[in-house]
Image (tube, rainbow, N blue to C red; front, side):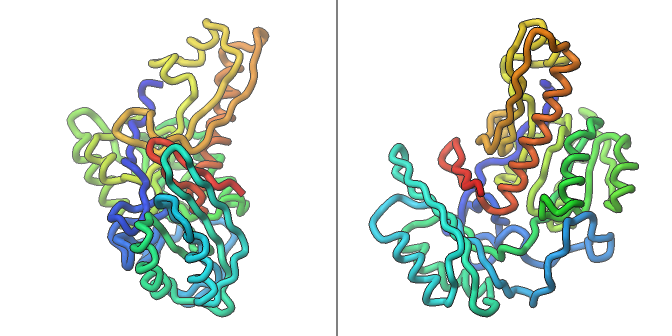
Length: 346
């Protein structure tokens, strides 16, 4: 698995400090970064919408009936009181709230979902929240709870993670949109075509890698991509592309790393008699396969399992861990805590 994609995300960070949080697109209004998924939608209108799950209800542009607010800051007295007071003042009723106080870092983390009496203007709400956020030095994101993130899925030849994600989207279990799929091989084009999703083949060699990454950047901008998912994309991304996609890329790899590197890791694991097979989904960084972990899955195996059995269990683990990581990120449930993550699962 030494070919596992080099990680791409610097830190998913928050708003209000100039560093966008997981779920925040750099360069947006009110916070130093627009909420991911906001703004004009680019060529999806002409190139097809790609695959999304059950259709959300029509809403006025910029209007939300339910919002999600995530934040982190140094812990102090009055944060929850101030936030709840702000929501009450704007006629928003809290329907779900999760918080975590980390005694090690001294930071406080909060995710609040709130319903409005009548549709609210998200941009105006962000602007109004800015003063409170500045007062507490918050990294924060405020977005429409019904707005679906737009995913760029990048693959090579293995299709299990792509198949699994598309199935979950098709059945409504994963509420995101996939306007485009990119691969360094043409093998999975029929799968994308069957789902009605544009497929872009970008061959990568040592000589053409810089040009290939320029094209990836263009696609991210062209399709207004919120999150890049490396669903077994077997190329190492440059440090520069990692920085460009900071906080907007998730990778999946088998959990044998760094114990069994290189080709045929499951056969290596079989020879060593491992008893557990697993997978790790993480934010990608320039440190290969060492980004902040979002989710892990594990299966127990024993002496009766062959190397092929281990590989099969590993594929199942990869699908499960990646799907949960993508869902939690898309629902704005993941916040960074240094090199670790706080994940407010439902």
